[in-house]
Image (cartoon, rainbow, N blue to C red; front, side, top):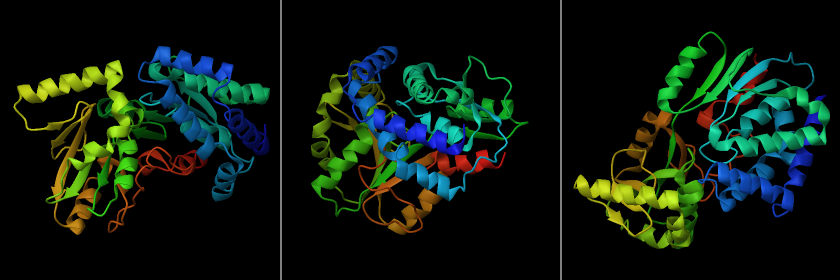
Length: 339
């Protein structure tokens, strides 16, 4: 297959995803939900829409072709991919980058997200059978020239040692933060709620901590979170929420709650499922310095107003990265093209 054929197959895949209520795709969605109860129908559709609209359009794919001067001259390599599964299709972008560059993906699926990734690749092969040569599914990685692995902080250390002798990208835990400036409207805060609650807060692009100006009434967030009240009816989320309420009570740690989420003042970036941390700030410039000093732990900084020397994402946009936005700020395409 040449580059044009690969791009065309991705565009056709995107068009296939225009109807997410067809019987065939609904069966796949239901199968994925059974395999992983965190993957609700609405969350799977949200992920499919995000991939379709940001990655699988002619315009977005042309951005990649032009930006990286893609052609058919690359020497094909085998790229070992250890995919994450914390939210639906989170590993698809790595597969997409390998396919666009012309490398072969040696894929170790996450048990949490095996159905959807397999479906997407099956559809690419159905569109153009020659695409089969670009994808290999394995239980254990072998015969690879480079690796991209995503996991927890502990597994990242293992990956770094395991892949030390080959080119690699290793990703580990990151979370996102938001900054409130006290000029936000309630509509802005509704958008922020999406950054907190989408995918139950399980993604690295989900906001787990909010910085607010000194004296800010943090309970305003409870009103903004009302559209997500049904989240508490999800059994696994509810169990985590109840556990964390009990844990805070047992530890006699102060917190606020509204039968949906715990809001707790804490210096930590990472918060538990069903919890959100906050911290007061007095000087935006000092906060900017803190953000830059902790950038290795932060995936996105969400703000409606500029922050000095900090790249920001607007409220409500964390789960809609563009095709040339990369996890941990590491350019996957440049990595693949340099092999």
